[in-house]
Amino acid sequence: MGLTIRPRRLRANEQLRKMVRETRMDKSSLIYPMFLVEGENIKEEIPSMKGQSRYSVDRMGEKLEELAEAGVMAVMFFGIPGKKDEIGSVAYAQDGVVQRAFAKARRDFPQMYLIGDVCLCEYTSHGHCGVLCGQDVDNDRTLELLAKTAVSQAQAGADMVAPSDMMDGRVAAIRAALDREGYAHTPIMSYAAKFASAFYGPFRVAAESAPAFGDRKTYQMDFHNRREAIKEALLDVREGADIVMVKPAMAYGDLIREIRERVDIPVAAYSVSGEYAMVQAAASAGYIDSERVMCEMEASAYRAGADIYITYFAQELAGCIDRGMIG
Ligand code: PBG
Image (cartoon, rainbow, N blue to C red; front, side, top):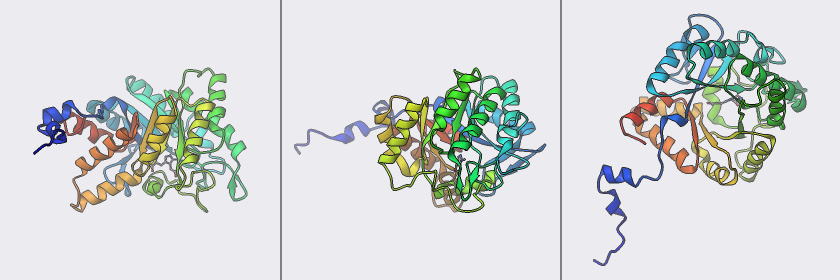
């Protein structure tokens, strides 16, 4: 047999497979998204996301402790306010749920890196990501409110802000406001290529943020588009984004790769609620092994070029890394 090249030589055992592994992961680039709800003594399971809970500020420490124990040291906060209005005013209220969460987490968990999702959809009565003008969002008026939201989060103790609204010009508006208010060193992770996706369904149950009418297609991207995703990422870089994100992750690996090659800043991938819910549902039906699947999903994002992975499985993945299932 004249076979000179035998790829299987390097697959002979686990030690060798690990030595020649092309993609390496560690816990320091995992971010866990967390839902904070108004009220007291609340830890309630999210029906659409079995295994995930919404916490009131007084009980969020339980989860933060577990995360820290597992070695997940970065979280992203989403607030679910007690009252919503047309202009999402709790999003930028100094005593808003997320602002109080930042202040407390800052005190109780100084070593945790705290990121704020900046958007209005959880806070508006109509569920859209900006203020309305007729049936559409008023892009430019929304920018002011997003900037106020970002500043209020930084004031409350957020280390980083992550605008997810997809309005044009929001990164520039937020950068200018942060700089003006003395937060020139607060990084912006922009949801740069964020698609109008059915994969967000379970999140909208969790955050009570489904739009009351219409959809988000006038601001989130059309999933058929590749060039436009690059355009959005480059635009955000030009406006001052420090990290750009692709969202969802699993069905968008091509864009993670493409954007990774086109920008010189870190690229984050957000494995969204629908990805989480599908894995949980299939695993509870006994069809798949959830741990092995989540490991493959994580590796696929990094293999595609992601530097950071945002996932509801962060704690479980940290365990998989510890046990050598992935790494
Ligand atoms: C807010 C926001 C959404 C998600 C993150 N930020 C929902 C949406 O755009 O409808 C989705 C996250 C997920 O599905 O896990 N705009």
